Length: 150
Image (cartoon, rainbow, N blue to C red; front, side, top):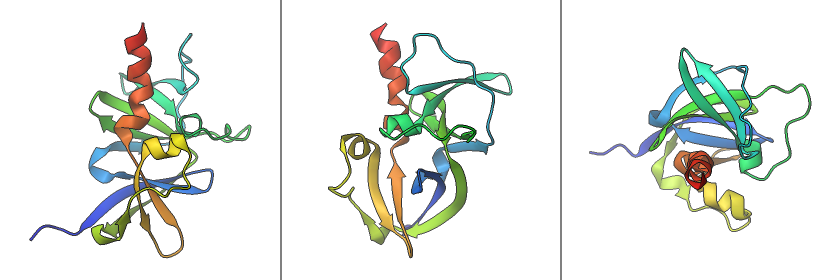
């Protein structure tokens, strides 16, 4: 019998709870020094060196159309595997791994703006908040689109 539960690595951006399927997460790490990428779109936070592997860091706040984080608040990294390789998603705060029942999954709410609607696969209603399921391939797609234009 197939499992009706799914696990998500969760994190916060601007008090919103997001989740990524645990299978897509390579690792979660604290703030890493980043190298800026000249002429890159502002959605690219920079490049990080992950034990010799150069990984592009996507600024999820900007990708979602939100304000930059306050000065002094260092982002954390959720390193995910996408169809195009490994990418770091810059988030405000790491949360727990959450297990949810597939039957409480719903499509994205109509109240989401265009950026949110593009990146959110759907939501799970938890006891005290909504878990927004992030489409990691689309969130990281800014890197691929930018590269293809050159």
